[in-house]
Image 1 (cartoon, rainbow, N blue to C red):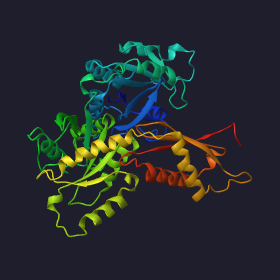
Image 2: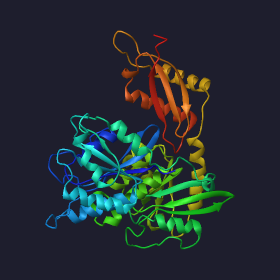
Image 3: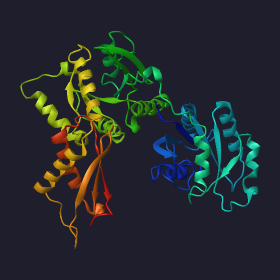
Image 4: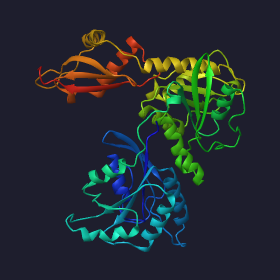
Length: 440
């Protein structure tokens, strides 16, 4: 199920970006006392009371014709509103209702979306008169908050999540393997979908950005049911000029979120780009099993070393995806495309692989004998035992007397040991270190 989307909207300089940073837990949005700093939508993940969701920070909506960015920002905010499940309308209690607030409220009423009023910059929460006038907007009860100081954010989020769609899985799709096909524009994502389906299900064009939305296409192969999700090509932000294309980026990211496996498509006629790295990085961060699909292989002049050279270059440019298998295909000629589905089944099995505690500890103990943990001051660092706590992705906990002193490079060593002994091909794995207070 795709994560609910929460859009933060309002006029400039009411504290939207400060609230956004508060919700996502880090300073991602630029915060200045200058109206209009945030011009584009910014997305990130958050969670509250067990519910994961996506937060969108929008530029301040302005209505003055002389502002050269006003029209663009208004469009961006409208697209965020259209995409959102819930809207947080941020207001400034120190300024009260302005003409622009009333105009934004009119837009929100027309959206028919749930709206939560955040009366920001409250200093005295006992003085209801500070924010009482916001009832006049006709959008429900205002929630007094201070985004800067993190006050009353809990009450705000408690109300926000009441508007989320109920958690449920689509019964019709529960047995289908959902495959998200992601990549920058014009790498051949739609061509691959059509090659699988044997029909022109998706528009194919040499014009980048033809696919504006995520398109789901169910099909059956070898008695197994799959759903292909063809996503809009994800461009680098500097090259995103049309508002509809900006809108398609969040659709692509949502498709990754609801997928079981991601196909990261590269163009064999081009080198791995910074944007390829960012797309692959998002897949990795979401802990999705993945396959690197190099398309247009039919256009490459080859010799006996060509594939090996490509493998080396891709591994160098996408080091964090060292676990992902690489396959070379041609969507145009359909060469090797159904081998992709065999890999999909394989990496999903790896994603759900579980290792017994006894076998795990045997391997880890052998690894520590070969490469002992470095010293930790007056007391040596020890890992007493380890266990796998979950699958999808495989997650392991190591119990230690000094968890904070185990260097990330040693954890990388242990990850490599796990992969060498148990596989886990195509899936990220997580290693956590916890303190064992019962042993020293």
